[in-house]
Amino acid sequence: MAKLLEKSLPEPKPRISQQTSNRMISIATISALILTWVIITQNRLVEPLFAPSPTDLWQAFQNLLPNLPGDLVASILRRIVPGFTIGVTVVTLLGIYMAMNQVGRAIFYPIVEILRPLPPLALIPLLILWFGIGYITQILLIAYGIFIIMVINSFEAVRNVPPIYIHAATTLGANRRQIFQRVILPSIVPDIVAGIRVSAAAAFGYDVAAELMGAMTGLGYRLVLARRYLLTQYCRYLDHYCHPFFHHRFSDQTGRCQSYELESARGTKVRHGVGQLLLGVRQGIRLAIYQKLVSKEVQNENHPSPFCSVRARPLHRRLSTSDSTTG
Amino acid sequence: MEQEKIKLQRVSRVYEIGKGSTIIAVEDVSFAVSAEEFVCIVGPSGCGKSTLLYLIACLEKPSAGEILIDGKPVTEPNPKVGMVFQPDSVFPWLTVRENIEFGPALRGIPPSQRQRIAEYYVHLVGLEGFENTLPRQLSGGMKKRVDIARAFANNPEILLMDEPFGALDAMTKEKLQMELLQIWENERKTILFVTHDLEEALMLGTRVIVMSRQPNTIQTILDIPFPHPRSMILKTSSQFQEYRKKLWELLHLNV
Image 1 (cartoon, each protein chain N blue to C red):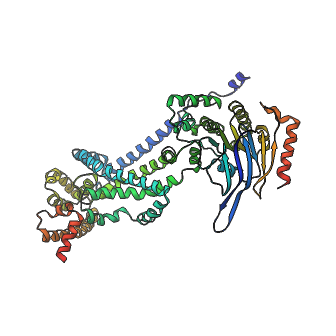
Image 2: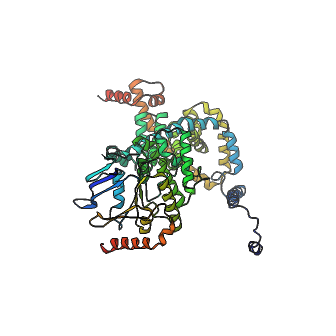
Image 3: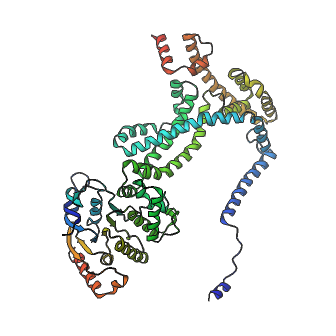
């Protein structure tokens, strides 16, 4: 009977496993995207300024290669890792505390709810005012960004631990500490890990934003620099004002940008001009703010390097000196 | 006189829901269970059967009355009183072995000894070969076995079981009932078993407590005289059917 059944069934076809075929679909998708990119850029369907070709990208990568390790270390080790660690630690502890302690919830929950809708980037001016321009501000920005993403996540994770697990552990003789260590912590791990995964991506975003404020190294700084180098007039500004050190390093790229501009069509040039104008206005405003700060500082102390003084001096001193001048 | 393992004296439990309105989950319940008894509690849904077990396990406190275990009033959860819950309560982050070792591990029993305990109970509930499996890979019946093994491995003197087989299919249920009977016949724990399945109550219990709804209290206590060891064939006997009818009438004619 079994034999008969075996014979009547058709031979099973040798089939590629589902996993392999899925992987092939993924590879095909990426390949198609790259191919489209190559076709568009090779045939100049779009201005190279707006969509650089893969070869340009490779060139840029090679140009950046000497700086890349330093930038990555600066971004990841000096800003993202500390900011991320502080953010995740604080938020996990606070979430657990709020979920497990009624008084803790009464104290912190309203504060959290008030803070949560505040976008981290909106805090930049305040952070600069309080902590100056420097690592502390940048790290705090990242930590705060992580905080508002994860706080409800970790709070709800503890509250959603099924009571049945706590009951079961209780009847097996677990005390409060053992319940926390052996039941609550392991059961919130998946939620916390999910939160960490979401906020890890955001941490890089906040890092870039953080480096907009006066960083001298890092990925975000490099991004800002590159953007400005496309607009050649401002390259000079950066070269001279930011750091003479960069001057020789980027001068070859400056030349590249200029040649781009010569090649590009007239329409692009017009748009380019508008972009420059806007950036110029923004730079002007920023410079004005800086100069105001600087002039105040110089008035107060005749400090030789105004940027350094804004960055390095703690809040209370700055406040006290400004108080003394007004008073 | 036999020692009373569990004694409830005029126990009530009232829940407050919102302003002024209350629900009486258990009202004026008194009974005693002696050591090594297998007592089943049956009753319509919402009659406070589960609440009784939660009160005895001290997961909740009675609003009135007193619960004594070995003659002492219950004040806090006690590992002497184990519990198997109706929903699946196997810890999903631990393997089968780690789940079964949970109670002994809490008491700081050394790993080698823990392993022996785990092996014994894995064998007892027939989960050999699944020791290092995570619960998500197990079927509902297998998870229930882990639950039961975990409760037994903690070596409680009293085991409270809250409709443990309620969510299982009929075949698995019968199999686990027979296994539970065997374990009880070997280990002689005091078991309090809540169910809504009359056959299950008659099959397992040495006594059956029948509860009523509104008031949520004890209606009758029936002694079940079937000798041990019992087997499934018991279900076909006319005496069993008689008892079944009697129980059914008690439950349905007084509602």
